[in-house]
Image (cartoon, rainbow, N blue to C red; front, side):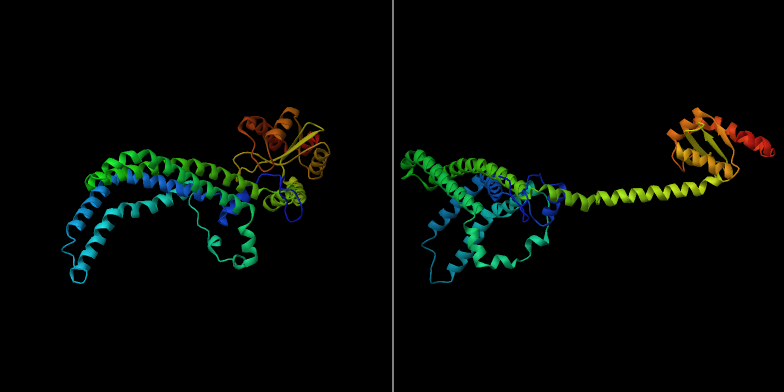
Length: 363
């Protein structure tokens, strides 16, 4: 059943990109801690496989050295501290690869899931976390129960895997009881590595399942109601009614600007009744004639009326008028393919300007 928001509206819509982006800015991302742990364990096993021989050799030498010098160590003497510091340095150098590389693997695991993310909001202290009543509720919510169940399953699986491996390897260990230390270490390392490999395989499968579940829950939690989607669209794109009013205002401004410019036209090309296109050409400032007004039907008649009121020549050329209307916007220069036709009209007008009666006959 779909979740409901505070207004009781069902959240049936997938989260928008903006909602996901806002959640990410708040540090709210789909993330699986089990996936991180599994990747770190995989890295640890790989490191153990690479440095296992090195570690085993070092630990063997360390054990042989310690047991071989027990008679020389005086717990009450001054040499005990030196032996202790030497042992600590030796062991630290032995396990240094793990301490240096495993944190890097943890960072890489996080980057694999969520990419680079830094959110100050996520690390800000929240007072509601100090509320004991809310804290008790969180202990028994659905997510906490699922997490507890998954942890119990993981512990049970790890224990079972370890038991099976040790049970199978135990017969091989008994003959080694009287063997030398290196042989025992080798067997133990082999057994531990085997347990880790099987455990990591199982945990990695569980981590993939958990990651899939976390992403599903994340999407479900971010789902929106239809009204929330509409409200967000209004916020991002603007209210459709307001946008329609703005478009009407822009059209009105453009229309008034066109009407204001019409008296400056040099010629009006018509259909003759359905289309009118007003052209202006200034040889000093223009490379080609420019459309300063155009219209259909009633607007075409108004353009022609303004032309007659301002003694602007009106030329009937239906193909040219229709083409200019379709291909040119107000304020644009005419395309090169119309240069010849328009040039002939303007040249004719210039020749007839000295003959007012001829110009009047064109209108």
